[in-house]
Image: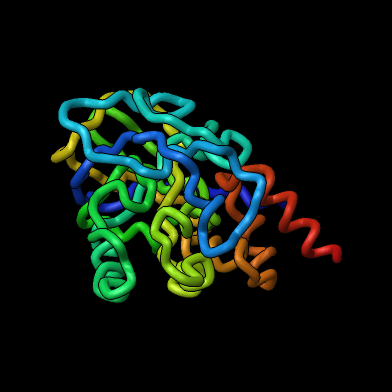
Length: 233
């Protein structure tokens, strides 16, 4: 029998947008990261900076942003990337002696830096009203060599994975304008209960979570296909 997730209204849970961040395109640091070599594009939009005023969120992304690695980023299921300021400060405290710069809004390559929203424990398919837009939690961000090279911190991909604070990719269900200071309201949650943290654990090695991935219809089709392959392997 197929599981059909029900969207339940939840008591209003409000946070805010600390910053809206757009890319400053730079040479891809993955090509010079501690002797690492890969096939990443020569340029990247990982270096995002806060901007003033309103920014339009649309179905395929963020107006004014730049995505250079379109094979792995962007598209409907990864239109917007959000990271919690609380998690950013957690990283700053732990890596202060290793970082070449102090972490600021945009340092994770995120479009939205949030305050007061527990992104890690958000439910897949959870819906947020942010400014004039409605967003849906889609899938966690998986760290890559571009991110590691940008920070130039030893074994960052491994450490980011172990920490389990991935940030959320979001779909844009209703296009609209957002700006720093806008309220973030968690309006609805599916009843399947699969969290971003659990999905991240599954996608980074815990195949025992495959059955639970299949209970969340809001996950991208590619994740469901991966879970099915794990179950028959």
